[in-house]
Length: 630
Image 1 (tube, helix red, strand yellow):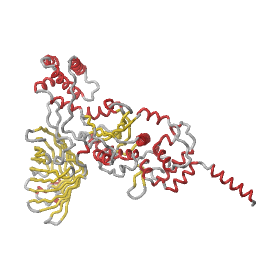
Image 2: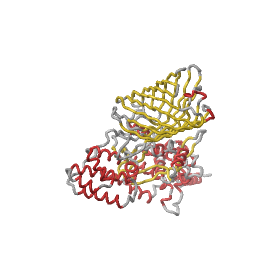
Image 3: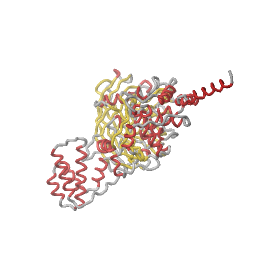
């Protein structure tokens, strides 16, 4: 071969390399750098490590993956994304290009492959219209308080709000929110709770106006909303929007207590703020308040939150400004005795009458609730109240914020471990307690609803020093106790439910032979008592059932009642006293009765020293424990 031929071949080779499609060179670089192992890629495609090796995408939705095996193969998915750059535009139009369906994914690839010749970003009309309609200048993390009457909301709820550029705080109701929730939920509450626990629902992201969420939470469910401004740079906000867009096409298995809104929010925020280590922290059982704390600890929340109080708290705050006579007058107005009440209110000053009318209107709106057609009588009553109010020369006075309201990050953490030692009449023992969530009557009450208790998956393991053996004292699946103090305007009942494994060692048998499955249900009344700060009295009618070897005939079924009080003895010292009696006519017909006194002294925001004195039939025991919230 002569020199001319050699030069010709070299020139043809160089031309061939120059003509090589850019995605092929990008693919070679991605393989050499093993980009599919980058945590950012696994985050954007929502991969989780499987228990026995390998990876699995969290969504079963096929359209969320470009490769046939993209759900289980991060490398195949990345290579399919790069190869798609050289594909022609789909017949359906540019919005169906992969770059338009997954803008965050492709934005990261462009950054990771910087320096390669990559086709410019295509025009994506649908995504651009959506982003323009939101027009955010910032974003806000919103926390809705816990709502014990709904299984999906027992721990609270978190979602994002996109704050429109240039709008005042007073116009935030018109902004849009990004929310993750279960859809196609059953109306039957038992089936709803069951399917929510086992993952029988599809969870989806949705975009709704903020006023819809305010109506749902503050007005209908009487829950506070806490608004935390996120400190995001413009490029971080762009990444957040891009990732939110691509998640809109997918669904994820929804579980109330594990893969919920809290679980899904953290990777979304880390996609916006790379390096924040939010997704790596998420864990089954993390509740929305823990999410708020984590985001705050990572520096994304630099301001104190803004409180949007519930309608019920506004109603009560307005009522507190009235005299007893004015309260009775406002109640009559709202209940229908409008003519006589208005005639009487005319004798008040304009300022006092305005306060009474405002309280009456708030009460009427609260009682109507979500009913879109409350009837002509109610509508006419509301119109008369508003007409009378409009004629008064008195400005509405701002309603004071609830004095006892505290943001969720100020409360104790959700999980708890306890180390204790105790003594019964015939033995001494040590106890280890582990509780996944969330709060009981003796825990530090800051940021938790007054009188509320919610425990999930609380295990207590003991070691008997005399018998030298360990045993399970109890394994509570769920224990809910909701005390709603009696209110003549808002008449809510108190209730409780508890189920799980218990030890019936009060019947005289060894505790390791006394384990049974129990169910306890109750309804009753609660009231505030002038016996000290935060004192609540309550009384319940209860039903009790149990199945296990501890009982004659292997079961017992009875009914009775309980009564007790919860009191704040000092700012860091609380007590809870309860007496209980259950008559047992069926099965093991030995009645159940007892008295329990508990006290806790807070050692810090997430630590407390607790003493429990308990008597059940003839058995007496005392337990001293150190409780640490994690």
